[in-house]
Length: 186
Length: 179
Image 1: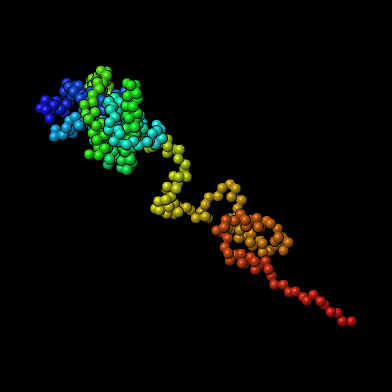
Image 2: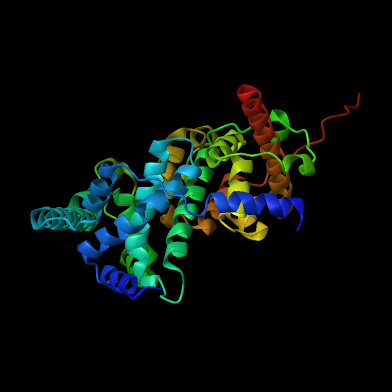
């Protein structure tokens, strides 16, 4: 870890407001992107990120300099997003992926499909919330199935099957997008 | 490398350097929340806490005093008091000893009509000389009714009964006559 960052963290541990501002400016964009990924609206992402930063500065004394600071921050945002997701889950009705789309596609054919990040983000947003959570936690944020099951309060096999279905669904959606783009060009 | 793994890596790479600038007002909102509250606000909070504690404590004290209030004692039925006093065995004995014998009980105006022991004896004596029909009159019964129970001795009743029933000879009902 950079010496400058260590000093900033120490200053934050002492409760120095200027150091807190510097840390916020350095990491706010990357963390806000994480929060946006896990939510459907910008307002929800703002709530998550504000709650996360409060947690960061209140618990910064528990951070050990042997670990990755950005990883620690990211983990706090993801955990806060999970809490929000579980809170909203009680009120919303979520479709099973089978009800939306479920036609497995041969991955060999998919390998040739080109897609952008924004197309992928769009496709992830189309996933039923539970599937989207499992996919992002496992593929993008590096959680294991055991952790996902604990965090989301589901069975480990459910986590595995949801990930598998989410992959197929995304490939299908991205292939369709690519196909349409090619048709437009021609 | 499996197809799934390849797809996952491709996705992961896309999100490695993700970055979206948050709205500027979010920073101010956050740091205003993190900023320690100014002293008047703190003082106000402290005063409020002290006031609430005082009111709570006073309420507790008045409640405790209320339970010992004489008004509550007055509202208690007297019977309860008696039960409490009688419950103590020493006091119970004392109250038994204090009760005077029945003969010594003072007579009220209504009880003045009762016969004294001497009067009762003389009444018995007179009764001995009464005829059967006279005996049936309720005068004596009434007098006996009024006599305190303690003064009536069981032996006297037996004697009275003996006096009332003299030996009588009964003749056979059928009488045969000779010509």
